[in-house]
Length: 348
Image (tube, rainbow, N blue to C red; front, side, top):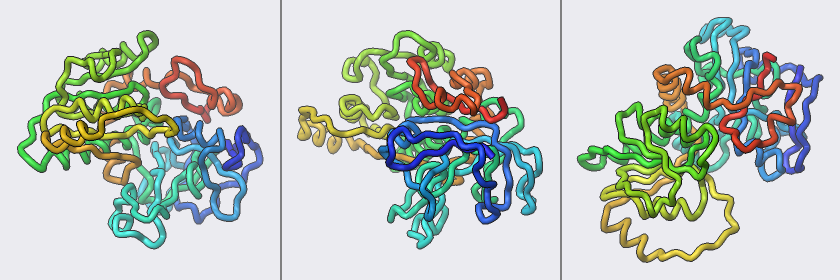
């Protein structure tokens, strides 16, 4: 069986092995044939040796946390052979903490969670994988070409879930949304915003390539100027770049009682001068909320599946800018200038 692996902590240890063991039964009752695996920034960090943790007793980690597969067998009866399925990435810690105990494992408080293809659980970049029924998300058959987008969509579904919960603190009638960044997370955040009927603005540096047209196809407005120069007074900002200057400018840009959701992860190591007192004054006097959001629980994965089913399939398909056969795995994990979402294709 083929599997894409790394040795965590060892830069450029990416390998395709052809004799990887079949997934053991203890991984889950549902046996799945891999169709595709999406690649994101986290995968690149793991390949670079910056992150990643093999499962106990193993020296290598199977990559892949953005999954799409087809059920081969499910003795539990949860799904049927032939069904499309994705595997939920994060599993609760074994203690469990109060959040993990009630299914909110995306909000784990002690850090003992595990994640497929990232932390102590083998990933989905292998010909066959297993999943427990409660971590298996069935998909509409029509989503076969784009179902691999479910994991990043779940991330933004969680972000919107929390934005709406925070908004309910008062009489909330948002109209305008600003999304900073037009990578996969930013574009999907904009998609979910347009599905909610908001006036959506997306900020991105690129002036060429597919991103401007993808934003406009949603009915949103595309901007390339700095955040501070935008003639927009957003009720909600979804920050998806992690760039420190953009993050700070976004925190200052929200309108009265505005909500700023940070989904981009900063790399750190860069110092910038900033008037923290002015920011504090703005946040307090305008009743702003700034919060971080990462990962997703089962509720968010189900919401994401519904959002994808409502979206234009052609638009979703346009997010996938490269589909690379597994045998050309090294090419898939090498970034190209106009990449949005690169997919490792197990069917080619």
